[in-house]
Image (cartoon, rainbow, N blue to C red):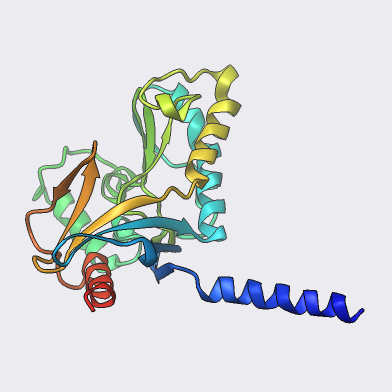
Length: 247
């Protein structure tokens, strides 16, 4: 019994030490994602310039919401290219809260724009209904092309920098190839969910002297020519990581 207790204690200590010694450093974002860097594997490739393995992870709530969207968006692969107003069933989190939907939340702006339109002070075509006019401004559409379906996520807490996109392909390795059909719809959905759920580790590049960031394209580092902008996540990432690594 004493021997078993000792083994359990050692296992607990080992687990705790492994967790405590984690090499991943995390910064959380407001859109239910976190970015992590493996600082122990950071490589100084030039003076004060670093290559760091990084990964973006999503909260369970965000991932569940995105996978819901995938199931709803994939059938649009079978529709003609164009813009489609979102069905109400897309709005499972209540009223939209993104800036693109500002007309829904700032009546003074909405009233002014609508009044200007009615008075002929805009370049918009005459004869639009209020709903058509609002639709033009909201950005609440599903944009279908031959290869992808993209959608402007209507909730700030899930919003990405780019539109949320699904690929009309049964193989994500061939995601530039359109092979969607109604009979393959479940497979396309499954492929997109698997792809969306992956947590792929990729290298980030930071030049702490020049205050610039870079990305790797086909083995070559492409540096952004201008310093990171103030009051952005890019600035937060660079400042925090450089402070930790430039010691």
